[in-house]
Image (cartoon, rainbow, N blue to C red; front, top):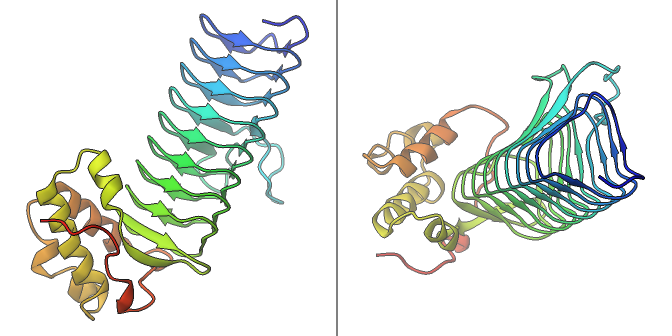
Length: 267
């Protein structure tokens, strides 16, 4: 611990933790083993899993930017082996939701990205530089959010989705899809991402058929959900169907049929 770091006596610091100069660690903070907190960071009301790396000027667990927040005891919970680069801001939750902002394992949050109050972030999520998540955003596992993306409050982003740079996202994005533009439209499936996450070719082919039934067939959503392509024994297709079966903000869709599946053919 650097002599200039300010660490509250109630903070719980794990084994082999390094805290650099001029960092401020407040009460109700628990830092797991093998973390490195670099200089000029602020951490409040946060549980940080082991092996996390926090770069200079990042702030974790500060008060939510919400007019109805009146100092209630809420928190930020972060999993293991996450990286927060320079200037990242992550706010703790509010009692308007569950009181917790939650981040899974192995997240990488690049410089100046922002995660607002009450967000829920899965494992292996990447936010590129200056990506911005509004309050109550829910992001699944293995999602890539590119630079300068803005995501509206309460939006859900499905597992394995990819959002292209500069996109403005006002509605939910289904699992495994690519979204692009202001306002975002679907541009096909994230086949490369699916391969990297270990999904086999047969399952990818089945996901493509499910995508076509929902977004390219002209069927209404309730009709598409009953299509044989969405009612097969495949875990990833089931995940795709389950996401679409939950009424929410509506879904980002292709702008027109010329946007069909702009990725390599499968099978």
